[in-house]
Length: 126
Image 1 (cartoon, rainbow, N blue to C red):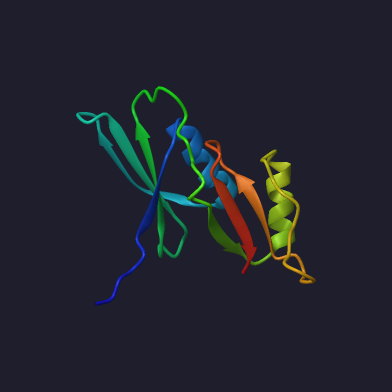
Image 2 (tube, rainbow, N blue to C red):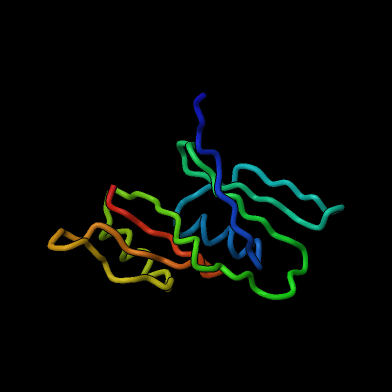
């Protein structure tokens, strides 16, 4: 059997703030939205122009407290052709941005930004 990666789900506190983050910071597009008011949650799916993989934002109505990200989940990664330009763009947006990083004696090849809920997003040279 063959399997295809479809989506990853994260729970968010402020749906519209999270949608705007992924649209503005990463140029993702909202491709689907389902409101299940009878169950008190909304799902929003975002993807890049190739539509190979989606991020599902789950918003449960009236969450009582922020979600715990835990220590098992690490991050999402997105590739970009001009890493330095992207890094500067994210810094100018006022996002939480790490320095450019590289593994032992290698040219810098990645950095991280943090979304409104504290999820890490790795930006890699692609």
